[in-house]
Figure 1 (cartoon, helix red, strand yellow):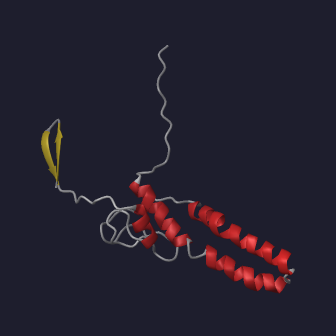
Figure 2 (cartoon, rainbow, N blue to C red):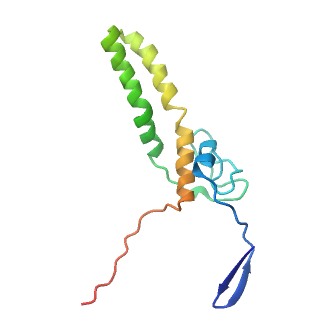
Figure 3 (spheres, rainbow, N blue to C red):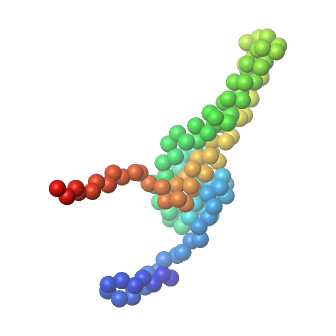
Length: 141
């Protein structure tokens, strides 16, 4: 229960207080960033509309291309380096490149997408990230 003191006196509001949960834990596990119980995803990368446990509306979440950026940086670059190394060292044929580099690329790019997206959504909730706003001050003249 939360008690607020305002201009109209003391007001009691029934609010369930949720302790702040670390985004790394809740996001990577695909759990609700507020309660840590409900699921974040409905499918592989599709966010649910709201948490089934606490009712948190997930419309605030917009990870955009964040997960793809991290996957490109940490998974695609090593895959390309592997392909270049195979070509330079062994003069690998097209089929060798396809059957070695292809699975490596898929194995390093697809699995981290969901945990990264969950982490970004949980971080947005934890740090109260929202769209930027332009604040204009009036100049006295």
